[in-house]
Length: 283
Image (cartoon, rainbow, N blue to C red):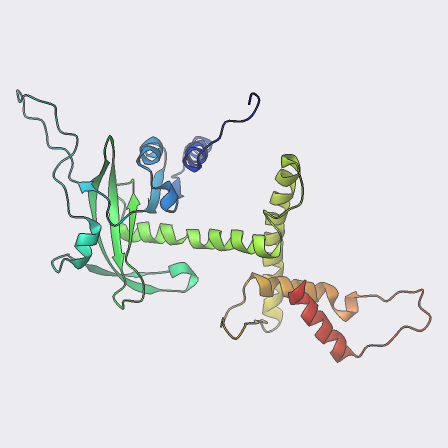
């Protein structure tokens, strides 16, 4: 139908955003972090001159050595890739794989974690498409986590830095999950795109405001952490921060009764505090 916008794939949006960010910040190094949806050879080739891209990598990806230098006078088409390398899945079971132990800080918001890694450069090849990458294969020496692999378009990047950069996306994912669960992002009832474009930044700003406000109140008193029997936590989450701010606003000193009531019903302080506490987490 004429007049409708042409559909854009996720990789098209990613390409546009990454290159635009690099144009806006020409004197800064831009590092793009994405999940497996952005592990597309065409996308990586397009953004590689502009940004450093890091994504997950399949364990069965076809990895090759760089194409050998063409011998002068040799007939035939020059090769585009070199000798096939073992897959990362094969490296996992190979006893000769040179694993190195590294301590990664900030492991998904849980402090430090010891992992074993192996890293090298390769040409990731798919029929008709290829891109040079540095891969990082990670396994847990304790066997609790599944092996994972990551790629980086910067061939000179330190493998430990690649891991640190990738796990930083965890805080971003948690932010979007919390604003959707508690503040209603992506569940607004507006019917027009301009209305959604106005309310979404406000809700994201509200998330920051609540976080900063709660952080100021915590040093003055003991941190309130509520956990369910099936989920134990030692540090407050956004739900605790939101409940803390609600309690500050709904405290008995901040709630004034109606002046039109001649004989208001008195509620004990303990009962009122319990009701406010239940409303803080239920609202």
